[in-house]
Amino acid sequence: MLSIDADPYDFEFDPETTALVIIDMQRDFLEPGGFGEALGNDVSLLRRTIEPTKALLAAFRAAGMMVIHTREGHEPELSDLTPAKKRRGRFPVTIGDAGPMGRILVHGETGHDIIPELYPIDGEPVIDKPGKGAFHATDLEDILRNWGMEKLVVCGVTTEVCVHTTVREANDRGFDCLVVEDCCGSYFPEFQEMGLRMIKAQGGIFGWVASSPAVIAAIA
Ligand code: TIU
Image (cartoon, rainbow, N blue to C red; front, side, top):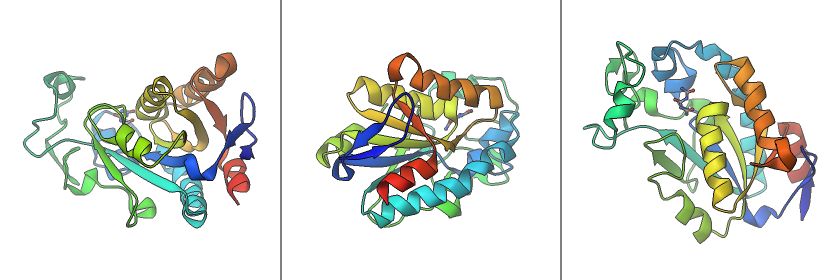
């Protein structure tokens, strides 16, 4: 067992049964002209997560640990897009509409893909998810159980939306989750802070929180 200096207490893990799950580091959320901007957000707020996540990903790859990527998005015919999700926000441009990076949050479009800095390599599963949580309507739970994973190191965007939903889903399925604070980003600084505090409060009601240097030090 290895140990990471984390809140509310040390996170102990076996590298053989611990996976890195990188949530939705897609152009649509991190670059101008995508879904994040269509929702009225300043996407530059998320970009500080890229460099620390590159280092974290490199550490997992060097250690031969499992890495999984997720992407939020929909089939080109929008068959997996609920009418409620399409309508939400009453924005003039929304999911499935054309934007500067192609149709917003649609599989195969430039904006839907993972940013080049964190691009998956062969052997790393990419989970396409239609919802905010990575377990809803995906194979993620089967993949984790088939590969014998018990604990998850989770990061990505956005902290209070897809990272939180995924951690809550994982927690209820019996996975211990450690959230990497500097590798998570929100369009709202106050949600970033509160989102992380909610994870680790009450004895780690949803999981643990640590910095990427602490995680990398433990793995190295
Ligand atoms: N809007 C927002 O904060 N997030 C999302 O819509 N999806 C994810 O968090 N990936």
